Amino acid sequence: MEELVLESHGTKCRLKASRTLINQILNGDFLYHYIPDVKIGRLDEDVDVELEETPDLTKKAQIEFPRAAFLPGIEFRSIVSTIDYLLERVRQERHGIYCLNSATASQDGSAVTFWGGATNLGKTSSMLELVMERGFDFYSDERTLICLNEREVVGGSRTIANRKPVLQKKTRESGEFHVRSPAQGHKRLELMVYPHLDHGLQQPILYQFAQKDFRWLLLREFGVNIRGAIKYIDDYTFPLPSIDTQDLAEKRALETARFTERVPCYYFQGSLSQVSSFVEDYFKENAKGK
Image (cartoon, rainbow, N blue to C red; front, side):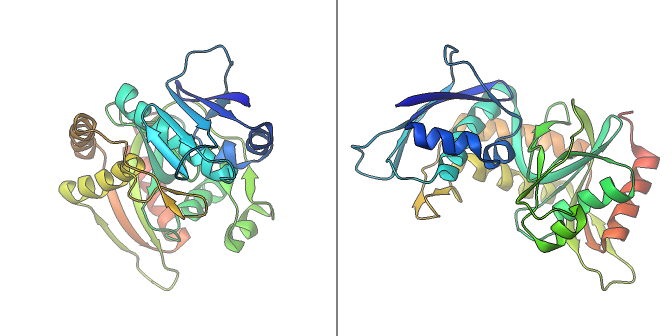
């Protein structure tokens, strides 16, 4: 058995597994895309959670937080996602930092996050349109870390998922992940957009979410990250149990309520040009984090 320590925004996990599995994790781009701002830690460091390959389990995985175990033969991407599942609880509890399925662009000290639970909404495409056509900086793709109390984005996935042909056309690369230098540091979150790309509209459909609707949608996204509602491993064949707690759920609800009172969120149905024009105009009038 070999050991590997992985760190994400001050939270650390020790993985004990075969050399083959650890090499698969380290030699693939998925690790650096999926776990936000991941770093390789020292083996002598204290850790927050542990995950161990264990051959005598009676099921594919078992979690007794802060420790978890899995059977040999589970593919490496499932192990990476399980590590971040464990780290997410620590990030939420200790730092008030929440991971959101989203793509973020920044300009100076301000940021806009495109988000939404469904796939194919246009989160990455909208972010790239700002970066490539409007002079914004790439901040994160797929997963963004948000500190709710400070209304800041504080990290995220630092490569761009390039699996769809429309994105490969935009990045002019055919690989699974597009590497692009991201903006660093914390950014004030000025705006959140729930996109719905539709290039057939002459006039876009645009409205600001009511605060309670925004809060409910956001709470659902933060909750599933550690409640296990959609957390499966091994090619979606084995569901992981919830690692949420009542205290943490109450804390999350309070911090989300405060956040949604301070940060506006818009539903935007329209083309890439229309949504990027909207964001650019909004930043000119409202951005304060410069």
